[in-house]
Length: 151
Image 1 (spheres, rainbow, N blue to C red):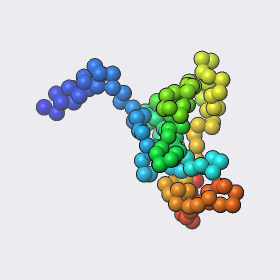
Image 2 (image 1 turned 30 degrees about the vertical axis):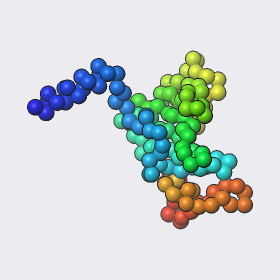
Image 3 (image 1 turned 90 degrees about the vertical axis):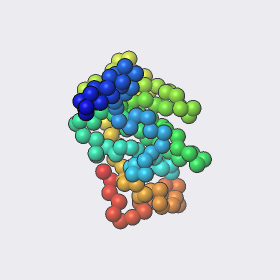
């Protein structure tokens, strides 16, 4: 019975072209998303780079909070733990441009604005390290707690 159920689900997924990848359709960051900042804006990244292993098939997204709701900035696609694609997301939610990567190199058909492979694996603090602090005199966030670690 279990084998038949598993086969039925697998057939449904394949016939309906449903992606088996993880975290690619998240509209907002989970509560445990990592945090970093740029120009006084807190960026939320999920999953955090340090937990993506060699078996990960899925996406890593980056958001910022805008007028009470999250806007997705970009999506990094992984296959077997390797970065394969970067999608820059427009303000309306559509794809601004795409970048393809093969063995850490940007492929020729990719947009000229593509970030270097090394720039895609961002280190983050755990949830709350920036979002529970306040802007300082330099319009930047201080880390809120002593236990916060950049990973």
